[in-house]
Amino acid sequence: MVNYLDHKNLANTRIDPCRAREIAEAVARCRDQVREAESAAGRPEGSVRTLVATKTRDIGEIMAAIGAGVRLIGENRPQEIQIKAEGIAQACRERGFEVESHLIGQLQKNKINKVVPWVDAVESVDSAEQARQIAQRLAPGQTMKVFLEVNESGEESKSGCDPAAAYDEASAIAEIPSLELVGLMTIGTHVEEEAPIRRGFAALRELRDRLRHDGGDSMASCEGLSMGMTHDFPLAIAEGATEIRVGSAIFGERLFV
Ligand SMILES: *Cc1c(COP(=O)(O)O)cnc(C)c1O
Image (cartoon, rainbow, N blue to C red; front, side, top):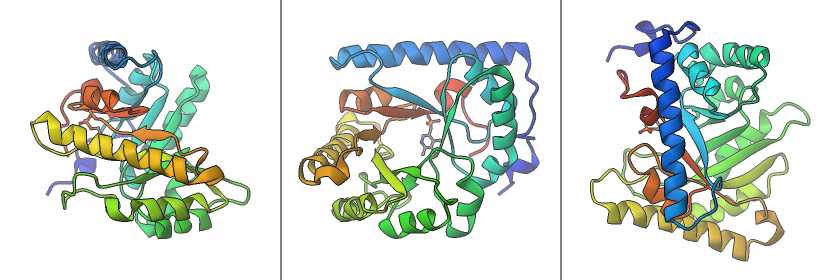
């Protein structure tokens, strides 16, 4: 497989005005679609945050999205964070933007140190053991928001913990002092039919409700449901998503995977 990092300079900060306009229009279109889905689900406007997934996109593209109003971005790969995070932080400082950044891809133990200084939350925590490894690598006094990723689809290619283990893993994570368990995350089932996709999202919501109902004070902050991507976010919003994660809806199809 060719490494896309050899073909595209992700640290690039320049952008063609046409491309910037295309991205800004996509941000506005996506915002409208989220509002429509909120309203169709009888949920208040603004109850769903939109995270923009920035894998394979360069700093110029990401700043175009931020300039158009995006305030939450998500990276998948520690290597991309290393290339882009400092440049994005600097551009945001210069332009007065406050942007939150989440890790949404798998995190190997030896990469934790490279990621924790740059992100406000890790959405892809798949076990209490991994959560403890993250906690150990935080700076003194630093806290980190985390989501437990649950593999609701059961697809082997997907990351996340087994739904049967999720309750216990979440309970253990909530006990780690320097971490704040803020919710659950899942990737929708990769099928055409709506029913199985919705079932997965509903199962994540039910798990969240059970944790909050039975978990007492330690689960007070575990409210978030990060679910729904470009092709299934209206279904996720109908099932209670508090955050969706969209990439191709904003930047177009990815040329690299
Ligand atoms: C890439 C990615 C997304 C966004 O995917 P699109 O289909 O491009 O919207 C969301 N979540 C995760 C974990 C991703 O890796």
